[in-house]
Length: 212
Image (cartoon, rainbow, N blue to C red):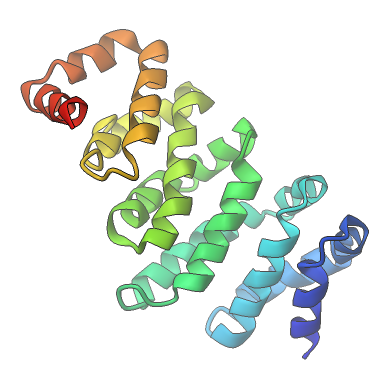
């Protein structure tokens, strides 16, 4: 009942109420719950829901970062993927991704934290193997890493480079964002990206996209 009440407070649009939800003591309790109740999905999913709602308040993000929420979120996503059947637990995974999205949007430091904690292969997996609901959140986070830093681009190359995105280019939903992302990457590493785009298979795939 207490967690259900906290969810109602957390999703309130009044930022003052959300601020009250983010007192240090409450955040530490939520972080403890993420670890203590990992196997109690009812408590865990409600805790995730609370953090998802409060993380949409920009003024709270630094506090969430300071208690080490990003590694915890990535660890929980990994656990739910490993222990769930296909398309199971869509809502909590989506909530966890929303937290990542809110925390990393327009913040290169947090984007690097996600990458250094194994976020790229995780997001690639979700983008290729999950439901549309999850893909729509995971894919934009992945695209952010192209412009973040040399480090994040290096990690993208280690996980497949631009082919991460080009493998999805047959999907009409992703095409515009993929083309924008590749064009942006071209400005950072023109020689490497040009060489890849001139590859026969990649070039033909792009020609087919433009024909359609």
